[in-house]
Image 1: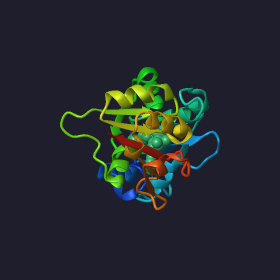
Image 2 (image 1 turned 45 degrees about the horizontal axis):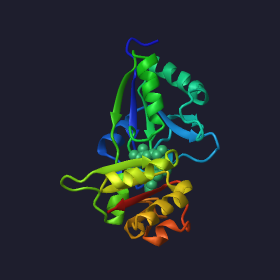
Image 3 (image 1 turned 30 degrees about the vertical axis):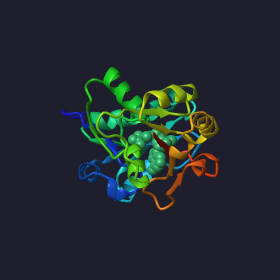
Length: 235
Ligand SMILES: C[S@@+](CC[C@H](N)C(=O)[O-])C[C@H]1O[C@@H](n2cnc3c(N)ncnc32)[C@H](O)[C@@H]1O
């Protein structure tokens, strides 16, 4: 046990292009000896780790995967072992960074780790380094302003609240849907009912080499169903 506990950083690595990582994210990652990253229990690779590796050499650092269940992201059971390992390093005085895709505090698995540490381990000092979110990256790549003046934006994780889509369309100027891939048909029906199909833009894998931007009916006909997609509807 060291006299000083290490600091735990939540690092936003941006939406995909490593050039969109902030100078601060790169500087912290170059310095810390321990790097954690979220990994789906389904065994898929980590997008956050791939992005960070494009900007910083992680060779020689201790890499700690945090397994998350996509169906039950709030459960702490899958990552308690990883957290125990990280707490040991923090107690030894080592700084640790947790990578998150986009911004750490926006629909990120990091939020569960952050709140758990705040509640159960108040001795750990926490710092969040914000990142470029997929929301602003998708708007930039699609060339669609999100809001100006007094306009209102609604941001929804479409996967969990399909019933909220209609009311949000009516009460906002711009609707942004994350995790939209599995709800595309329900979204299309809501937009058709309001004559808004032509206002839809789907951005898949924004800022990555596989990026696609589809507008109007093509955005909604299911030709692209990728988890890493954002749908923007600007009225
Ligand atoms: C768990 S949320 C993470 C959001 C992230 N923290 C952020 O700030 O963008 C995952 C969702 O973000 C969106 N997303 C993340 N990266 C993306 C990208 N490069 N292009 C399009 N959508 C992306 C997708 O809607 C995906 O389902």
